[in-house]
Image (tube, rainbow, N blue to C red; front, side, top):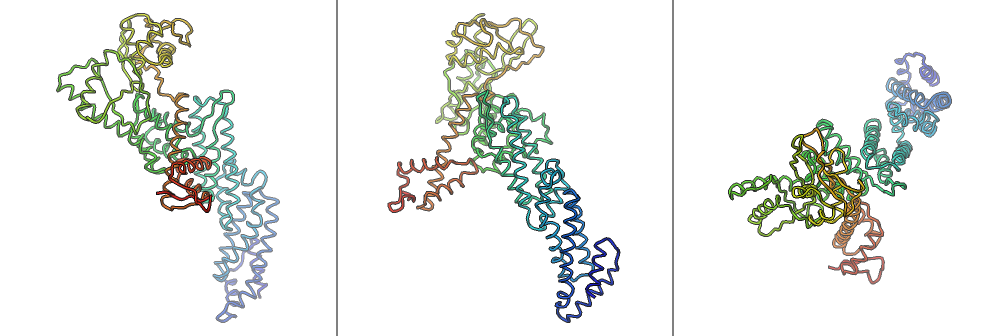
Length: 591
């Protein structure tokens, strides 16, 4: 009787129709034969069914793996599994289903897993390359059945890592000042593509999330080096510069797309090891957007800072938030100053908009000895008088390098409003008294370093759209004796003309300063982490201290164990710690 039932099962597996109600009756006879036990059913029927099932699907798998592509094989396997489940539920005992399915899975999936993954032209890598989401989803479902998604996740990690490295290689010799946006957008698109795959097709499986993180971390933290240009640029710098570009033109992105873009930016930022380096670049560029750029979307700035805060904590964004707050407070201060000017019946020669910055929040700006033109003097003096009355304990230091001006220029074809930096305005105002000036005289009059004078003079005469001045000698170089004069023939159809502002871009000197500042800040952060740990535990061995210190700092940067060791030595020399007298690799905390 058992063989008759097994023959019916085989017929159904081969596509023939059978009477399932009769099958159920036959199976029930075996169950009833055991009285209150399933022993007869399990021994005389179920065991034979399992043997036949394994043999049947071993033959099926051997045939499919030769004739079918990976997607075709998987479709057949999934269909067969669904059929067996339906069969078990229709006429087998409830205890049989899971064991039966396991045997089908073993033959169709477990034994063929590596063949399927590595099948030429249609295995996992070709499917990933062609982004065959339906097939990849099916592969994931099948491998999840047997609890072995790891080989699939590992292959995805390796493929994505290589695709990312190909992007890095493609940009290695390019001028990143021109290709920054293209590079970051390529990374963002890559991230979006594979994040969607993992979240949807691979059901946010932790194995795949970790694999994706490993892949992106490896190439995102690879610097772009150009041998021909002798440059080395980190993704931290490029991502901050990309943010700078976006924040200056949020209207081009559109409100509906901006929030999504900011989310993607912060997601990519999450893969960067040197988050503190990004933070310092971002702080410098934010300061320029808030103080110098003609347009700045404060809501967008706050939104991105809030997202960074969610990822890295309040300490990471405290200075950025302070800068935004200063900007808002300055607007109130300007209103109060205007009331002070009215009430004291002072008359300012120009429209004046002062901004007061809190030293601890903002980057260290260069304090110069600029000789202020007479036109500005009354404004600065009046504001100092106003500010001193409000805050007796604070002193003002003017940061002229970050100021902007609107200068009225009168030409034969009409007046022009020239938007420029304070330095550029100070240069131009000298020509109200004279027609020609050598560069060395301009430098002497302004009391600025000659390098600053050179850069600002060139910005006023090199650009075709804003060649306000003309010069003698080499057009692209400035010598002390080169003479400058007002370009009376200057023409521009626009009433408002924006002169290129030199401080908006990060200079080579600033890049070096950012690196130095970041390294110095890391020393303090490492020391603080060591002291916190030692204060809490009193005694720690070297390896544990280095490991736990690294864990504490990983949200901001990946510390070098050698640097941690040097900071420990320094703390010992300053008597915060001591080596244990019995164990040289153990440190004691000195209260």
